[in-house]
Every structure is written in C-alpha cells, then in structure tokens.
Length: 202
Image (spheres, rainbow, N blue to C red):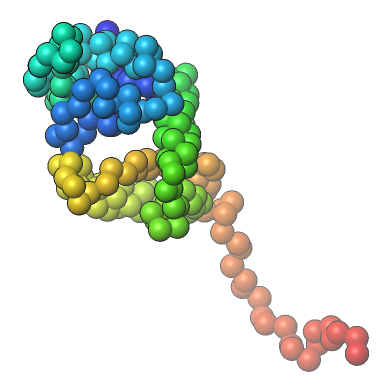
C-alpha cells in the first residue's frame, strides 16, 4: 500500500496525528486518545500502520500474560511527497478533502465532548476569510504561513504543551478576471457642476 492510500483514511491519519511530537503510546493509550472509534477498529488500523512501517515498536513488556507494545511514529514515512500530490486527479482531491473534513469534525466533536472543554479559554478558532490575492501575493502568503508553522512542527510533546489541530485550507473560489472586466472605466470627461446635481426633496 502506498503512503497516500495508507494515510488517506480518517482513523489512520488521526493515529498519526496523535503520535506526533516524539510520543510513544500503547494501543490502550491510543484508544483513550481517540475514544469515538471502537477498539477493534482502532487496533486494526494500528496494526496496518505498523505492518507498513509508519509505526514501529519502541518497547515491549508483558502485562498480565499479554505483550504490550509501545509504538512510535516514523516521521520520514508519514509524509506524502510532492510527486504524489502532483499526480492527484480532481476526484483524488475530492476524496482527500473529504478525509480532512471528516477528521476535523471527529476531532472537534471529541474535543467538545470533554468534561472541561472551553472554546473561549482554549482560543478555538474556525474563521473563514475570502481574500483577493495576486499570484505574487498568494506565494507571499503561503511563504509567511510556512515560516510561522514549520518551526513548530518540530516541537516535542511535553507536560507544558497541549496538542492542537491546525488545518490551513486554501483554494480559489473565483477565477481571476482580465483587468478590463474587473476595473471600472476611467472617467475622462469634465466633472459635472455640483449645482446641477439633483437635490433631495425636503
């Protein structure tokens, strides 16, 4: 199974998210982290991720006669490369977007179901902005976002940090138009006399 097919599943990608930051977790701990997915389903997807090498066994110990494995993420294998992205068809993008939305909805519902969820205090945000950008401005914006986000992807899990799901989404909602269709025609005639303009009725 290729990396794209492996990660393009909401449960498997949620497992990958949970493992980021250098964590080592057992299947039981992953079940507690993703409580809305049944244990049987989660075990099956963890096993597939381990079989494909995205998860590797960091430690083993015997617990009540059974072997408990602690997994860690192979960061180098949990990446979809540029070549794979460029090969996607519109239907592939549609499917990938649906997976991303399913994860957002599942994780947000799981967050709100916590006993002490506080969206205001936790600085939760899901605003949308429609902005006009030239091609140069678009590249500049993407560069600024990468500069802000990329260094923090290396942050390790620690007691003073919480894990946040950040999901930038960007796509054009209108095609750019020729200037002649978008800019008003310049006014070249003389300005009308203000005294000749109609006045509102008293």
